[in-house]
Length: 174
Image 1 (cartoon, rainbow, N blue to C red):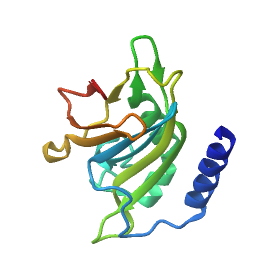
Image 2: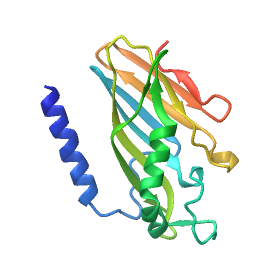
Image 3: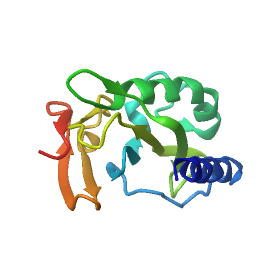
């Protein structure tokens, strides 16, 4: 079963990498995210404002172009890996197979507004109580929150919570 999940993730990843960025398509509502617990894996989709990433606006015009985004893709990935994670009492779990999908402005399709991240966390056991942590926040007040929905259908668990700069971490299922 795990083999087929890995093939599915790989196939989806390749498909997303070769699909051109669509100017007005959004994979997730801005500043929203989901955590789906399936067996010992947690699948994440999260929309981050591009303004949460410092140093990617090379020409300092207040906007991040697709060219600037692509030039800083490796740096942005590392930033996400370091600042969006699950943790328990002893461990920090980083995203496996991180995918980045920039969403552009409706007015200017070469200007990135949000970044939707997707990936998977692998947990050591099904009973691990984990916290979700986000340390990437925009300097723009109205963009300083994330509304998260977490589900575990197998255990009939559902939780909605919000993260912000003062509460950047919470236990997912209490």
